[in-house]
Image 1: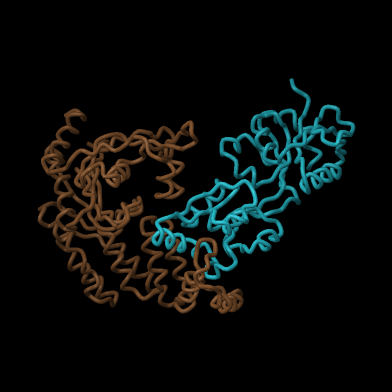
Image 2: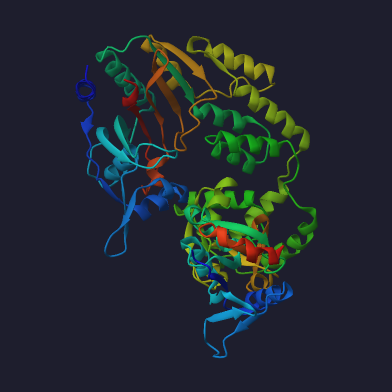
Length: 345
Length: 225
C-alpha cells in the first residue's frame, strides 16, 4: 500500500473507534510554549518575529498543539490528528518536517479503560494495514514512583529521582551522588543557622525575590532535619539498579515483582497500582514488560508502550497526566495518547 | 595583498589601561590621537599597523567579519557569541588580566539554597505552586542556558538584561541572576550570593585573531610570544 492509502486506512480505524479530528493551529505563540515547556525547547523551534515584535513558532509537536487547542475549547476530548509538525532535531540533514498521525484522550476519566482503548485502537490500525509479527513493549512510570516512595530517604531526594527519571544520563549522575554524603555544608551551616533565627523574627509574608520568608525557612528547616545516611544511600542505589533490570513477559510480571520485593526486603504490596498494565493481558498479544523503558519523554506519568512489527517500532505512546496542567489548565487533566511512526510502515 | 594590520582594543576602563600597558611591555608603544575622543591610534615605528578602540563586544564581531585582524577582548564575550562566529576566531593567548567569573547568584536570604541541586528543587516548587518558571536574568543567555541544562535544571526562563542585573530579583523582574564578577563586591553590596557550584566560566582577557587574514599576522604575533 502507498503511504497515503495507509494513512487513510489508519484514520478510518481511528474514526470508527470514536476519535474525532483535531486541527490545531499551525502558528503558536513562541513565548507561551517556552513559558510552559522550558528554555531548552527554544533552540529546536522554528520561529519568526512578527512586525509587532511578538515571536511566533510553527507547531513543534501535534500532541502539544492539540492540547493547546483543547484548552482553548476548540476540540472535544477524544481526538485524532493527522498533519505536520515542525522542529529542528540536531544532526546534519535532519528533517524539519515530521508527519504525525496519532490519537489522544484528553481529560481521561477512566484510567484502565482509556489506556486500553488507546492501545487497542493502535493495534487494530496496525492489523488493518496488515502489519505482521506484532509485539508490544510496556512499562509504567508509576511503578518506579511506587518503588521510590517505599524507600527510606529524604523527601527531596525522592522527588529529585522521580523528576529526572526521564533523563537517564543525568539520573545516573544522581545515583552516584546519592551514594556519597554531601548534602549539607558544615562550614556555612552555622552562619546560616544564625540567619535562620534572625529571619524567624521577620514578617513571614515578606517576599524575597519571589519567595516568602516562611517558604524559605520551612525548606531550610526541612533540609537540616532530614539528613541522609551514607549506608542507606548505597543500599538504595543497589535496589534502584536492580529494579531497572526487570524485563519479562507480561504474564510473569506478578511473580517478578514479588520476587524483587522479597529479595530486597521491601513490603510485598508496594506495587499495587498496575492494574492498567495487567488489564493488557486481554489483548492476547505478545507483550514484554521492561522497567528501563519510556524514559525519553518528560511528560509521561503512567503506562508507556511501543508497538513493533518484527524489529521495527511502528507506534508509541503513554499516559501524561500532568502535561495539560503545565500547559496552563487550572486543574490537572489526565490524558493518554499514542502516535503512529509513519517512517517505519 | 593587504599589508595593513588592524588591531581592535577595548575603548574603556581598566581593560583599556591594562591592554595598553600589556602592549607597551611587549615593546609595542601605542600612540593615541591627541583628540580626546578620537577612536584611532598607531604603534610607534610600525606604520603598517592601525589601532581602533572599540567596545569589547564589538571587537568579537569585527574579528568575525575580518575587519579586524587582531583584537583583545574577554573570553566570556567570545564564548557567549554564536558558534558560527566563534569558529572564525582563534584564541592566540589567554592574558593575565581582566580575570572575572560568570556565576549564578541568588538572594543572600535564600538560606535554603546553597547548590544547583537546591536551585533545581526550587524551580520545580515554583512551577508546581504557581505554574510559572524560575526566571533567570542575564547578559549571557547562551552560556547560562548550556550550564543550567548540563546541571539538570530545566524549569526556568531566561530574562535578557542589559545592565544592573543585580537589581532584578528585588524589583520583581526575575528570581535569580547570572553575572560576571571579579571581586564579588557588586553582588555582595546588592545582597546576592554565589552558589557553591555556581561557577559557569572563568574568564580573562584574551589575545584573539581573525582566521580570515592569518597569513599576514605571523610578523606581528612574534611580539607576543
